[in-house]
Length: 462
Image 1 (cartoon, rainbow, N blue to C red):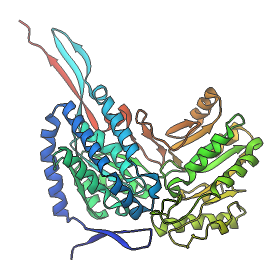
Image 2 (tube, one colour):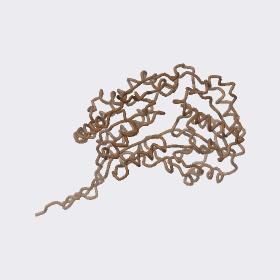
Image 3 (cartoon, rainbow, N blue to C red):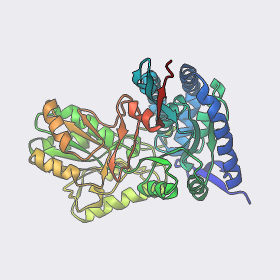
Image 4 (cartoon, rainbow, N blue to C red):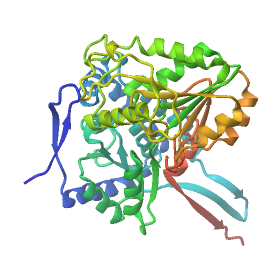
């Protein structure tokens, strides 16, 4: 019997889409066809590959109206937010704009006697395993530069966003990218691991859980396959005494609650200097109290359901444990009667929290945030570093020198000042500790998707 992957809609628990899982033999055939097509793809001029990838992104944009509805059905994001295409276009265009410079040879010598240079060689076939929370944004971070650099790409998308991979491949194929160069697959965990262990890929990029990343690394052990990972996060915000308070509250609370808190670099804990703490909390509660939880197909909904009931259950468990341990819930449940104990989960702000509580340590990935009072930069630094994760941090001050000084003390991949929850395509998207290793976007993203190849050419002289 053929195994099926099912996408269960968080809107009503119905089966939204099903797809058959590939057998190992069929999956190996996909990889073989990608490997065969990659050589010819890499021989094409860089300018042609860039043009085709950009055309693929444009074709994706033409599908946006349908994609927005699919996202609402698959993972619960309200239709009012219009999908992800703006960010997809920004990132793909950013990588296209720097591709020539990023991939050009490093010339050491070009004389009558020698040519010595380092060139960038594509890995071959790149496996991209993309998550459900931002299914297009996260995928394009690797798909676009991998193709531009001359790799073939095999995309495996999360079950929760089953149709996203199909849409991406459809768009790029329609634009003229050869069908075998960019393929979407449906794989179970065992087949995925077996493919990696079988040395079928030149590079694997995984975005997901810490456990998932560990599985990728175990599968690749001994194969010398490069593995890039972006895993969990518990990103902090720190509001200093000279911060623009209104801007800090607006941005940090939005970063904590947008997409029902299901953002890789969403804010999950906030530290506020004691002199601003009470006012910050008051303003934060006021903002969250205006949210409308409901069906994401309703244009008035600002907070949709969580993508899966087990995700909502974890947030409820962390919140309940924190309250039992002394945390104070600041949002009145009466404001959110739509909270059904299932995927529809009300937002919550917790005060009187400590790092003894899981809600301040474990990844929540939902609409809950703890706010703590601090008395100094030193205390805030110690608390921000008291985490197994390190993706981003958000510092709020009018002093860039102070922010940079604090940033150097923080164990994180990105330091933001006066903003949060954003990927700059020109900067490397990376993390440390249990957030993973490697880096996407920027010049470094191209370097991770290629390998160096040295040429030492001695010329014959008479």
